[in-house]
Image (cartoon, rainbow, N blue to C red):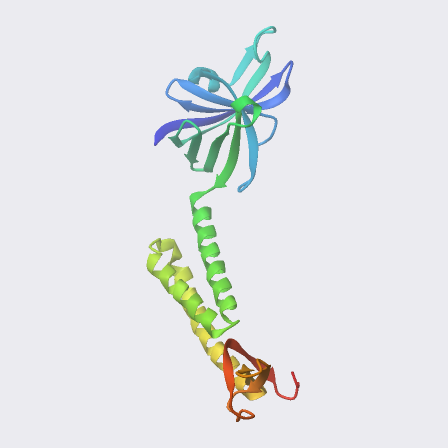
Length: 245
């Protein structure tokens, strides 16, 4: 990563009006973008419009008066300077400062290729916290889905176990421990649910008559009404006692 200075100049231009010039100083050059909007909040994005490259001296000047008739005529005032490092690419830049991280992504379809998406990524520690929360939400979602059926529960737990193996980021340790407790609680609850089903409902299976092709639902475990009935695979359901359905 390159050492950089990320700066903003308030530009009161005669023609374009008030706007902000954001600059990334790398060595003696200052890559520049303009926008009428303030720095966005964490997680928000705005559009930047690419401007000609300026000198580092210009980008760090506290006040510059641009004469009438010249490009950008008006007055610029230095708002702030953030020291940091940047991952530099031709169409993507990530700026790291102690105040936070910022993404610049070139959008070729905007304004003949001069448009760049600027996103406030927030601080590193905030990102880690969000990763942990997202992981917890995913595990909780899997475990709630699991309550629909035993087969789905087995799959959810297996997927969860695979993710535990893959999770190497220490930030997720707490999330993993929490998820383990959630899994124990869920397994206990699922066993209770199965008992309740047995008490309140009975299993019926679909059967087809080999000779006539007629089908019927029949309670599992009870004698069939004669010979010549074949169970239809994949057709079984619980019926609540007393419901008649």
